[in-house]
Image 1: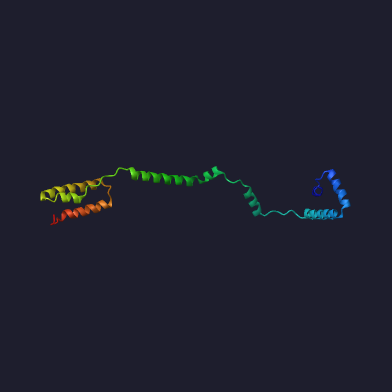
Image 2 (image 1 turned 135 degrees about the vertical axis):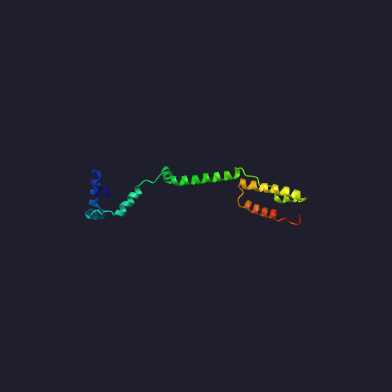
Amino acid sequence: MVLELYGEADAAGAAELKAHLAGCAACRQAAEATRAALDEFRREPTPKPSHETIQQVLDAAEPRPGIFELLRRLRPVLLQAAAVVVIALAGSFAIKFWPQKQAAPAVAATAAASADSDSAWSTSAEAIAERIWQAKAGGGFGASLDYRIASLHGTLTSPRSDW
């Protein structure tokens, strides 16, 4: 019956439907009610979609970006992340494999070994002063070496009676 209402039924189907409707009152009432509703629907103006509805349909129809498009959009972020990783690896490589200067031997051991005589003490003091000068000239030890040098200088300039 729907095909006949829309004018899409073939001649044999339309003739068969007319014959059935002629003998069946219930189907004839249903067909008349359907035709009346369809005619009423056709008389109504076609609603115009709102701008928001049109935009929603267009957005839904827009293809989703593929993996290559996502990578292209994320390229700056990925490059920054790669730079951070490279810098971190280079820094850890430098810390692990960069040649370190050897620290001067312990001053206390040198002072204890040379405490036997004044001449030994003056020779040892000259050696210690030479090591301090080398440490200052070589650099690379930082604030802890400055503290050690100041402490050693204080020890050398104020002789103790227990030695």
